[in-house]
Length: 185
Image 1: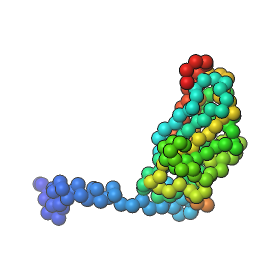
Image 2 (image 1 turned 45 degrees about the vertical axis):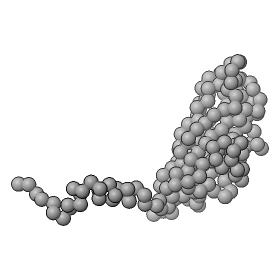
Image 3 (image 1 turned 90 degrees about the vertical axis):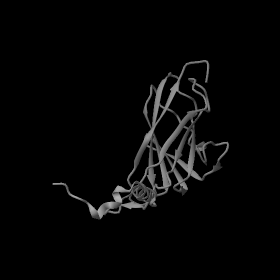
Image 4 (image 1 turned 180 degrees about the vertical axis):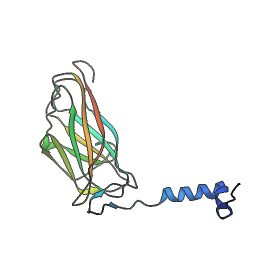
């Protein structure tokens, strides 16, 4: 026996279904908070691009840039970014006094964003004051004292932390950097 869904005739109308779907997608993001008070992103930030100003071994004052997009529906502002080297033949030695953050896609075109860079064990933590609002793009420039002396592929993991007292960290990806011996950049 076939059942007829007279109450749900609107499902048969593609335009109404499409409109309803768009409405659900366009709803504003709400801050997400667990019962214990833990805050997290409803849509995590996106690690959009990474680059190095020079890819040769032993070059001094190289800058590693990370561009992060905050989705409009992130739900929470970005308070901190954590950078942790995941692999590579040797460790990067970052210049903690010269780490910078800029609103936009590049340091040259963006407005400087107040931020503090600190080392916590094997991690670098950049804290934004004020935090980065949803819908914004930020580029973090991390200078190293000198590129590694050993060629190879180096990965730096990036984790985003929302604003709040009790927060859930969100891993957003790896920056991949190929360091080569001599010639080219």
